[in-house]
Length: 313
Image 1 (cartoon, helix red, strand yellow):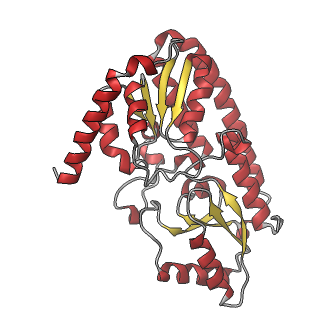
Image 2 (cartoon, rainbow, N blue to C red):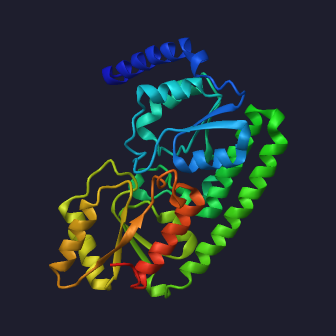
Image 3 (cartoon, rainbow, N blue to C red):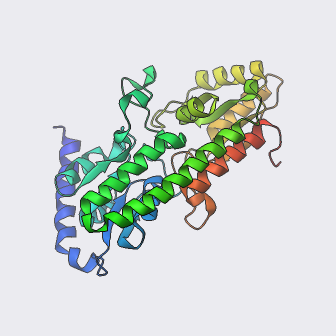
């Protein structure tokens, strides 16, 4: 074990001890099941399925990049007090790996995306044998993760099974309608114009499901910065194909896409920024985009408007 990891685990153990000693004061006295979720997409589903039976704490808020996110002392306290911990898995929360491993020995800790059969997952060669974790961009796949969330709630709180199953059935029906909406909206774009270019390569499941060619400036993880060659290569592709718009992401700095836009301009072609997409994090909690249903609708509507040249200036 290297010294950095050893220090992390020692610190984690101290935080766990401190949080346990104060757990009674932080407990939910209403008797609700305490659920900790890493991402907004997971927290949203857990709240909808759990209803009044759960108290959900989501660790990663709007604009947060889960690839780079490291647990704070407050997060450790939330995790240690939780009756159930839900996370994406597939190495999305890579920087939290040690913390989640420690929690798994203490509380039910479920990687919801890993319930999806491996033959339905993407394993791009550049990701060194690991699966692409961005499964929520294919609504039909995300439905399988939602089913796992419901099962985890039932396993942890069997007395609430009827509530959880009823709420899950209603939510899964909404997801089925959402999936059809995205398919219908994508169909408004001519097939040869369905090219989605974003800051990082998060939309491959989206592309496979809804018929888009997808290019990202960075790889699947944002941990590696894009280099000059990446920018110039993407600029060549855009100018050669006359792609009308590229898109920024709420959880990735805009400067990388602006650099691509400038490189395309130097080639004598203007590419617009078609709008902001929500990729690894949802919008503000009080907004429509702060829900999974609203986030997905916002994304497809923004993509359609941008690629059809209808985006707001």
